[in-house]
Structure formats: structure tokens, C-alpha cells
Image (cartoon, rainbow, N blue to C red; front, side, top):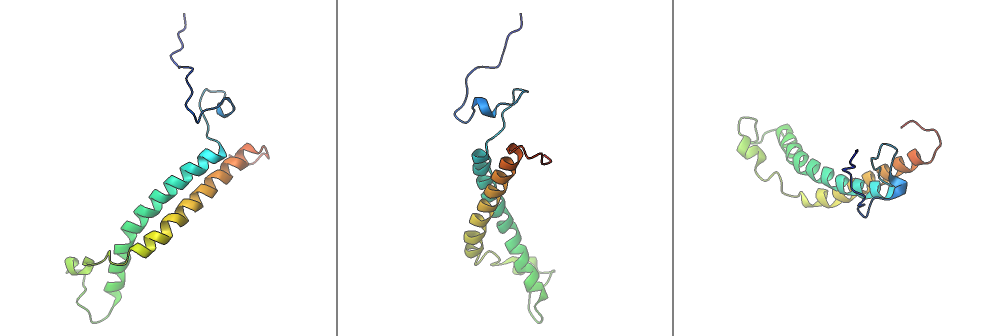
Length: 118
């Protein structure tokens, strides 16, 4: 006797049309869009929080006749997060929208049946 361990219960995002032959579920273009929106927000946030202080330190090191040196790292990074609000406010929505549109478009083209490479 083969016992099917897999339940017939379906979560709200699962639908018969999204089930593949292997029994795995693929996301719709809308679901990919939401996934891209969330991941794009996260990527943009982390990227800005990591890159902004490093860019500030780079600019400080390039300024002539200052106290900022590689030998004095505490001074080099002091206040390096000042002014990060504007880049966060602009980068997070931009990254979210970019990845949402990219993922939705990729899924829609894959499902279109145009014979495009996967």
C-alpha cells in the first residue's frame, strides 16, 4: 500500500493552475511581483546601510589636509551614517519597484509560451 503523505490541503496562494507535473508549485506573476517587492526592499536597505558609511569614508580619505586617515578609523567613521535618511527613502522604493517589475515580467514571459529561454 502506497500512503500519500502529502496532504490535499492547499494554502491560499496555491491553485491547481500553478501546480507543475512534479507536484511542485510555481508562483504566478502577481506572487512573483510581491516576492520581488519584498526582496527588493530588503536588498536596497542592506545595500544602503553597508555602502553609505564606506562611501563616506572613501570621500573623507580623498580630502587633502584633513585629520581623516586610515590610521585613525574611529575618526574616519564617526558620523558616517549622518544624512542616510535621504538615500534610504529613495533607494528602498526604487529597489522594491525594480525587483517587483523584473520578477513579474520574467514570470509573465516564461508563461507566455513564446518559446523564450528559461
